[in-house]
Length: 262
Image 1 (cartoon, rainbow, N blue to C red):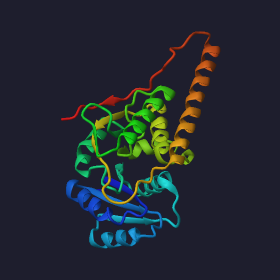
Image 2: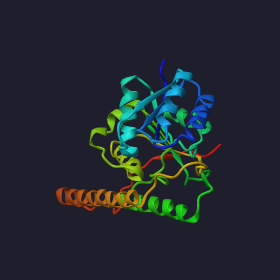
Image 3: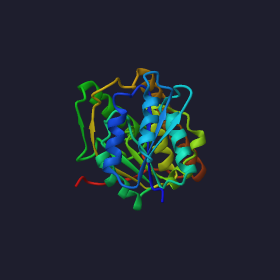
């Protein structure tokens, strides 16, 4: 029976890929890995093929061009849903997301639809980040909470577990955002559809090899899109007041649940 699929997007991650795949397989039972490679010029795709030949649990999806994090995950989700996986996981290739913490996250799908690995809830932590990155992440998440009126501490994190049913209920065909904004986009859609969301504290460890894919353009895109979504939410509130003739609360939080670390 197929259960969990860990989707790992790659672009020039040849130094990190084998280690993260080995750790996933060693730490998680009934789990397959799908490497989604965007034609990495450093040979990451060829390494993924060799790992797939060595491990029957490893699969590779080759894409012709570099199409961004969001496109890679959407392709991976489609691949996994077609093959009947119950849980689909987002995980970075660089080792920042610890596969050893995944079983505890997957367990939460019994009572939830989307599990967020959270750096910013009690018990969560970040290792080896410079102060600038810490401030950027905390500031971006604070802005997202206020703009969208969502009670989520880590809306931009990329370590997540979706149930297959949750992905079917989210309108993935309309998702076009990338990077941080892709993560906010999926969470925003999940909360608006009333899906059960929980934050689980994780330890995020900065990569040791290769370069981060974060760029100023991704940050700008995130700020702009979140601002637009927040404005649309407020316009919808005003229209509802005008339609029904009564005042609404100034902030209507879309809620979730936080799981303490054990």
